[in-house]
Length: 95
Image: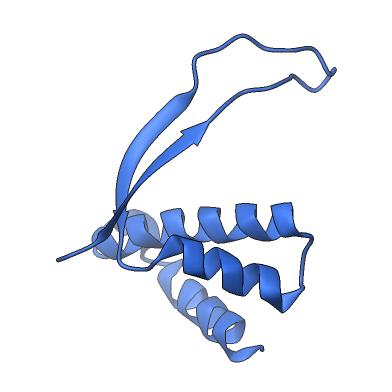
């Protein structure tokens, strides 16, 4: 399956007390069947959340859903899958 390829990097900036944290960033290369940048634009345009929250939501959703799609027969997703499908239908139905 042809996919878009991405490098996701997370930097730990500060702990809950506001103290800076010195830790190497997490970095992972992943594929996704969707253009994640386009999905982020769509989520921001919906206006459900502020831009940073919409970006985090779209990224998390696309990363999670791709793993679930690639491992659709994994027992971990068995009970959750129908609920996720319904959630995605609701999400895509709202303009």
